[in-house]
Length: 550
Ligand code: COA
Image (cartoon, rainbow, N blue to C red; front, top):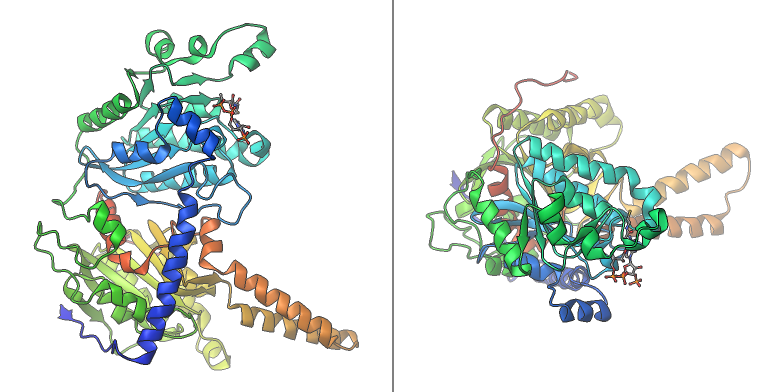
């Protein structure tokens, strides 16, 4: 492999300006991320503390192995929406428990009793998909008042899917362990009910299909919540609970013990993952001294100067690759052909990876090169990393005549049928069919993260508003009426600002179009963890494709 030599001049005006702008974006991200840390109103937190209970995040912290990273997933789900909280009433991510990679979810019982609104359920389904695809066991830290009743129409069917998925994972040998810390009613009761292992905390867990008021209403039976669904009753009489825990810490200890007793499914490499401190810092020196893997030669801080804060300004993706790959090495494939798409092999934390990165608009040659490279990675069983910064495919008569549609379609065909795992990072623009060819959300990469500067939409807001203006002018002409300039300008401005708002990284992550917005400096840390997770399962490149249009 060749070491990439940077051409960046860190003293240049453009580098410094861009660094400053990206730093602002990272600060904004840090501020917005604070919203996801909200654990409930003071009165509920006080009540929780007084009854000796921990918060969802404290439970996760205690459950994880010492120094385990916690790759939080979808922390900003629902941002900008009208749900209960940013991130829903569920905190979720990947960490290491008893030396095994594992998905952890924790209901935030201090927000609306941990009841499940639409965002929370959608987040739960995505987390479940990640667990299944990557062969990960799941530990649920449960305290949930079940369905958010006013949302019931929106969530009823999806709720069924969430339960179905627990058993489908179980069938695949991926157990779910539930530790119940508090009230878990109806839908909340089925989470432990469907799980492979259930631990209930004494005097705290209350698990029932219907609480005492509803039972009284339905059957006139008068019963208290402990007798109806307490940990003791479920551990001794109903058998819904497999273990009774003396307190929260004991519950967490038992969950760790169960994990320890599972057959070791992990093919984890020896201790090469970043610690939580390194993971959060996003520093560039991840070399813990525990492995012989070379760090990038360039500091990850420089990524903020390299990646354009303004998606309309191009940057050389090789400069980003050099700041995330082992030893800044990159073996470029077809470097002199289709130069707006960079393809080649690198290693990240010792794992070989095929990288496909945009370096401008996609022309036919670039799309063909991408198609070939995806096939090669399937042939040699190498996971793919897509670094998206794409304004779309080239348009115009010349390009239509040479068949840009079919060349683009071939790349989309290749990515659709590829069976090696893929990770996508949106580093800038993600527009139009370029998003599809570069393994956007619909093409099911195992993980998809966005940078805070990124934009995702059918096309840029100015182009979108401009196209609408042309269509409206043509329509007025056909109808033989004058185009109203003032009204047109007003509509154009409105469309531009609306499209701009809806193409923002935060709008996208709020809609769960990605698995999180990340600090660009942490890219290598995220990739290290995601590659570790991906290599937890066996995978095999496809041995066949659909018809490629020639
Ligand atoms: N849907 C929507 N909101 C709910 C809810 C649900 N299922 N369960 C509780 N909440 C809300 C409450 O309205 C209250 O909201 P507020 O902060 O705006 O006042 C908040 O959660 C806390 O509830 P509270 O009853 O004060 O908490 P608690 O700790 O005393 O009791 C429960 C917790 C779970 C025992 C109790 O809230 C309850 O019985 N909820 C209904 C559970 C149910 O029947 N679910 C059926 C789902 S199909």
